[in-house]
Image 1 (cartoon, rainbow, N blue to C red):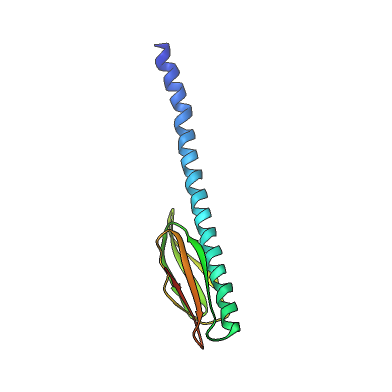
Image 2: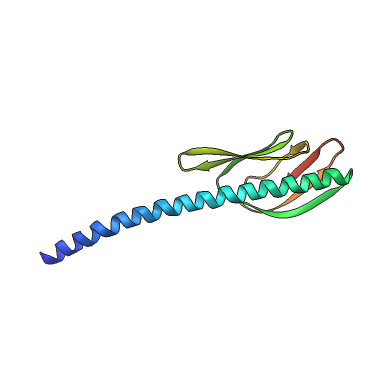
Length: 128
């Protein structure tokens, strides 16, 4: 009988600790992914501005890690928008730039080669 009480007491302490650990782990993963997406957007924006001001036909390539949980990447006129899954829903990460952007980018997590090319009045971004 004493063993059952002891096991019940231990479970009463361990189960909440596991729940707190899982919650904090999930929050940390979300924060890391959003920071990686913002850093990737900033790297693309900085490279696009460099390529634009170097003039046509400038082109630069770099490797970058695409984080998990990205639903879409949109290149608007002067911004890069990442839509990401987070715990309560989705969030938009917007990285502004001073040049017109267009292009496509893979949302598959992992390392990709990103090409940034000046095409006259705009900069084209592509990933493989």
